[in-house]
Length: 66
Image (cartoon, rainbow, N blue to C red):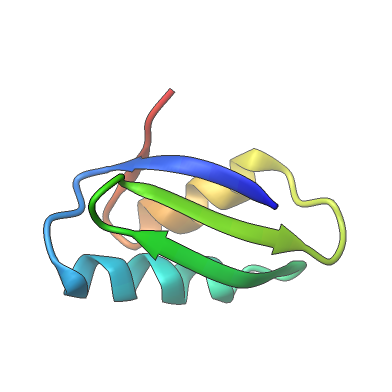
């Protein structure tokens, strides 16, 4: 399981937006986003470049930390 830290999430709507954005990325499954920690975890069916993940999160209105 992989994970990324996300900045800017403040509510359950944010969690749903990030979950939907990551779930739409080809090769990613089992997305879980935790509001309290700001961490999204997911499994990869095939390797996915972190820049693609970052772009999906950015498009949803958030940023990856680090």
